[in-house]
Amino acid sequence: MMRQAQVHEEGRRALRRGLAAAVAATILLALVHLWLGDFEAGGVHWFHLDRERNLPTWFSGVAFLSIGLAALVAYTRELQWLERHERPARPCRPWLVVALIAFALSLDEVTVLHENLFWREFRRVTFESQGPLRFVTQWQALFAPLIVLLLLFFVSFFAQRFAASRPPRTMAYGGIGCWILALAFEGARGLFKLAGEPMYRAEVVAEEMLELWGALLIAAAIARYGLDIAWGESGVARQALSGRYFLAGRRSLLPAVVTALALISAGAGIYSAAREQQRRGAPLPHLFERALGSS
Image (cartoon, rainbow, N blue to C red; front, side):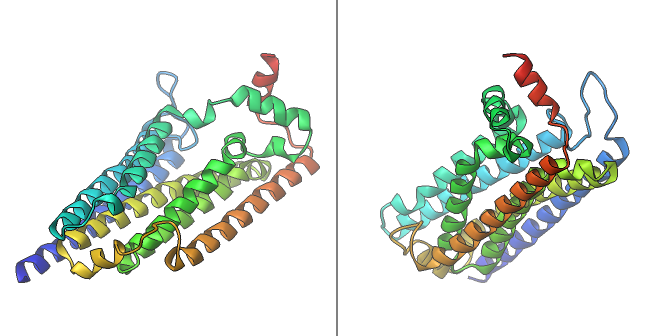
């Protein structure tokens, strides 16, 4: 038992050091962006946080990949616990959904698929509306329902799974909060551009750091939970796997409501920023010209 507790503590220390190193790497990315963001080689801005298919993009892809890998480890740990206690494997299967989503997000980060799907058709629709929607980040508007569903799924599932383990729960909620703030910053990016280059550069750094920190916190939360299942007290697994429905119930209701309110507030802020851009007569993003010109 003492050996198990020692391994558990060593694992937690290693996880804390790994998370600190990853966060330090994101800060280094931000500093390099501010110093060498305009550096270009081979047609690629290798260090610019607001460009794609470069070093920051690959780092982001790895961060989302780590969520998927941690989810697979959590699935394995839960499955082992259920087998030891001669219980069916069904309760641990949602981790496979988490892993699949994380791997899809990682692939999307690297391929920039979210900005290329229906980019032309959707911009034509929003342009014809002649409303503030033209000034909203277009992929956010297109995928808004999916974004809401994914975030509510994550917060509801984590609330149930991490009910008996406070550190993972705190990190997971913090990660989701970072993501919502990142969405708000990116959605209002046009307004920051109107405020001048310094404000725009600050917004880019804030938004990208929040996105990365959110992914790292969620990956660390899942990894910490896996440690608690494997080496910690058995009560963590017993309480986590006791609920019949992993998305419904008392444990997940309040976090889901808070997340929904945060998303509504972020959406309202984004729409307000879009209306302000329209009121000021801001120019449309250059991709509108490409979308309309290829009609």
